[in-house]
Image 1 (tube, one colour):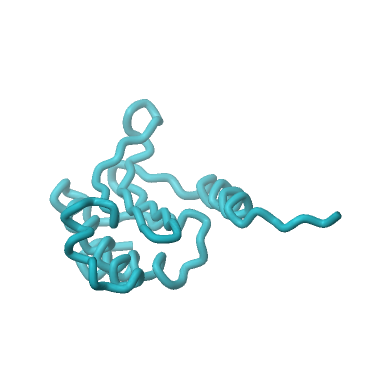
Image 2 (tube, rainbow, N blue to C red):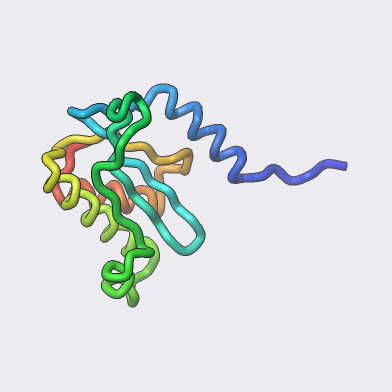
Length: 126
C-alpha cells in the first residue's frame, strides 16, 4: 500500500541540504524562518559563536503578547511582514546590518517572502 509523503519530513530534509551551505557568522548572521499553521517565527543566529553551537542575536514571533496584540486584525501574510520588520529592528539594535536568509526548507513565497520583504524594508541587507 502506498502512503502519503510526510511534507514536514521532506521540508526538514530540504532544510538540512540548504544548511550545509548556509552558515551564519559574526559579520553576517543567519535570518532563520519557521512557519507553523497559525504562527511565524524569525531568528537572527550567529552559528560560529558559542564553540559552534550558535547563539540567537534577535528573535520575533507572532506568539509574543505585545506583537500578538499589534497584529490581531492582520492577515497571516501581513503579520509575517511585521515580524520581518521587528526582527530586523532588533537585529540592527545589536549592530547587525547584513544577514544570510535561511528560508527553513520552505518555498520562497507567501509568508516566508513577506518576512524577507519586511526585514529588507526595515534596513537589513541580504
